[in-house]
Length: 166
View 1 (cartoon, one colour):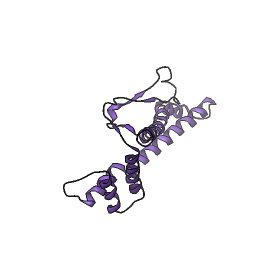
View 2: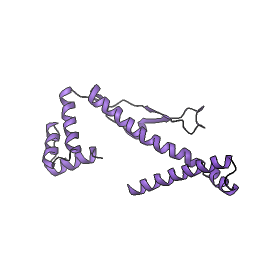
View 3: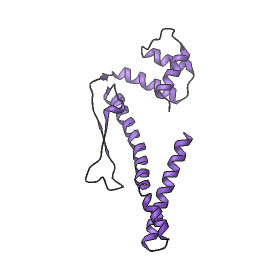
View 4: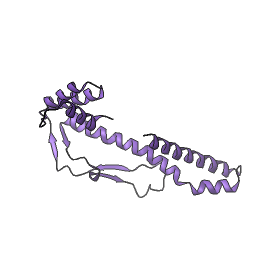
């Protein structure tokens, strides 16, 4: 969203300013009030690094689940935030370039897909990514055995977009 983008820009610009002022302060090129301002905002550097890491972590999670579904045919059917651990190495916690590790837990609800079922899921996702018409998306759901009370093409297409569109 626009607000999220504006927030990212503010954090990155603050982090860049802090780094620049601190470098200049090392050579006594800026007033002490600037150095104080930069020191008060030191956490912006860590925050900017964490925002980059968060985006990388989301992509990694999507890659892992995609690999499980399409390559292994066995996936965690309950991938909610409570099943994701973020672990920071205590010895590297003070290092701004250190990134936490991701751990996935609770594989109590798993689903196995045959190669034929994996192709059906892929066709559904591709039809949504390719902005196919409602009828095409709904038919891919139907091919997977998904049924609704009214068999509404519009509902199935919108449901698919809700689940898989970006």
